Image 1 (tube, rainbow over the protein chains, first blue to last red):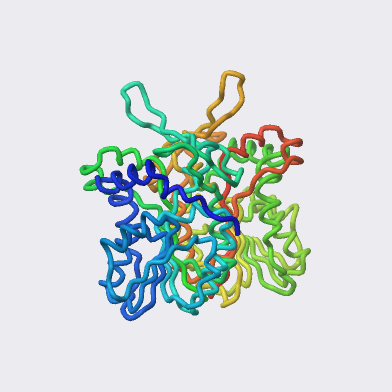
Image 2 (cartoon, rainbow over the protein chains, first blue to last red):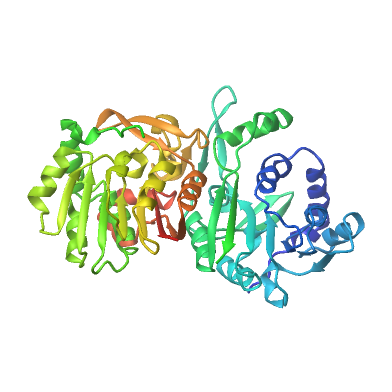
Length: 247
Length: 247
């Protein structure tokens, strides 16, 4: 499979990203609470975290009773942070592109991935690779940017504002043109891969999963109080979350 | 369950709708080809068509070898047309609201519904009722308006045009405000029920189905040639189609 872009080892990107994640942000207030609510009982299980970043979720899985946690990421900088801040005896961090999952030779009962899959070029292949390292009954839980957000060429989807500066709608385009989207996020040339909802859900099903929950997290009043910019995320979905069971 | 609106027996609506369906239209060029491609082998099976209208699909199911076909619809006018134009010995047409499926006392191997489910108020209950009259291994195939289309209050989602009159984006809002949408379509007061993609997919899964295919049909060059207005449907999804197997 084509290798994923390693934008996280770009120094400007990395520093901007770390700063963003340290303040009130979309991940912490919108995506992570919805993901946490869907994590199954992982007591005694083996867990794979794809795109583990600095390992905060790996540590949480170990603390929740996982027997073994493997965190993989494409970024050496992220993994250095993970080793420094979130090391535990039963957590292993490994430098590995998610497009190279076929290098993994062990099975995982729970596979988790937060906001990484929109960086992979071949999603059906990723689903097959994940399915092949999971036992029947294992759970896959992942989030990614929502297809209405990744759709527009150049990621130029945008909110529309009325004369009082209030957002009233979200405008998007190019929904059926699946493929690479290059945009500026901290730095130029960040690469996302747009896929339709149909392509995503059908690829999960074809790889041998029963979809259990499809969630599009919606900001709570408390989240909007902490980060008022989130109010406009009542207009359109920001993230897509799927929980599925290997059958 | 709350009864569905019977707009089809409004004379102005009915006549406008029949006229629309007789010319090149979205159903015929976009939704129906995608649905037809997903119909399983129904040789010898019993088939339920929910919102069968004038029975063209019921006749097609009988011709494809179905043992028995039951077509239900809320509209007496539609069923009169069905009896007149699409009668066959193994097809029965019955006046029944899809919110009253619990009145059906037989099982169906294949349950089909084209562009009707956005008219029902309680979608999870509809899914449970359908699941309860299907054997394990039976197939459910349905289409409805896409959630990005039903989202905006008053169904005021719209295409945006540039100065040359070319559509460049689709603007929508109110995605997370699930519920009734009242709009004008031929007549005032047509009632749709908006639900998020997450609510729809999760309700199908919870009712005991394995989702097999999720499809958002995209217009072909030939369809656009026959109905140029369809070109703008490359910008955003118009319909949602789900095929699921009872497990």
